[in-house]
Length: 475
Image (cartoon, rainbow, N blue to C red; front, side, top):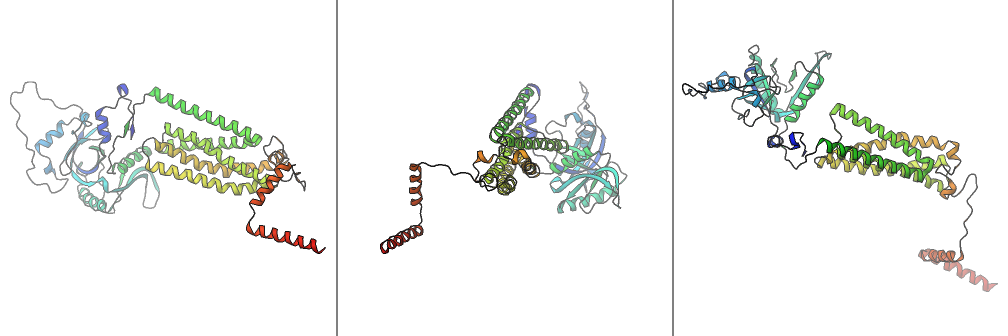
């Protein structure tokens, strides 16, 4: 994983690195106590008159479940009262074993909680999505919610907890259940019913964005994963802008070179290539914009490299198609027929080529790490767009141009001149005149033809020669 930091002096501090390497852990705990957050701890007097007595930290009675107030010992109550939410990011301030209570705060640092032991694990969450709340008749209420799906074990654990908390309804905050990610409370909703099907729904004052954010945190925070720093690069804002500009300039230079080559090689036919590249660029820009808006995708330098490489891959499709059409013209077909026949031959080649590109992009995206994924993503996206453009724009455009007088007459500037291509015929029954060949070249060609004869051809030739000789004697 490649990381960058915009902190002072642009360096990644040890605390941030430790948090990146630590595993994301989602726990579900019952709420015992809740209060408004305090950002300053209660300090003892400078000169204590007497040594404070040690508070009891062992429950006087054995707690029966995660909501039992027997967990709240005098020591734990004192820790809760003096807990400073400003220290929640510090190591070991909001960490507790799964079978012990936890004192922590929410992510916004506006509320602090005393939570019971872990009673369900985020590892048992199969999926978490956001959506509109619907009535029993299927009508939308216009409010957003987060829908959670548990596996078998999670369904059993949550059914037991939800039944107990629903029985505590009205005894706030003991009827609440907290989702804790890395020691901080994501949300602590009240239990409004016994959920036995493993599909609870969290409702509240959600917007579409906030509900999606919480759903993503619950879904991805449930994964028992950890990160290993494979590389750490410090990139300043100035360097990042410079690299971005360099990448865009390189892409522009590559595009200009492709345009010059196509106009030189295909003359007016190259305009189809240019128009196709423009259409592909617009669709690519639109897709990246939509992905950035809906999925939070960000174009990296490696992604820009994928777009630059895609310019050449996209131009390859048009070149294969045009060359197939030219081959058909050389075989004597009229332009309209050459376009159709060339398309049938070129389409298979284009699909095979793009299939290899797409397969390589998928393998890279699955197996690669860091910025290489961005390269693979844009490469795969542009490969699909390339095929769509060739089918829906390039081929129909060439069909239309083949019916125009400029191209169908074989204008030398059209790029489809039968004379320049060496076609077999030029119009109605007007065949190309044979080209004169020198005697030396003809003799060399004759020897080569004899050397390539098969055994059957040689026997037939010898039999014919023998018959001619006998006929001569008889005469």
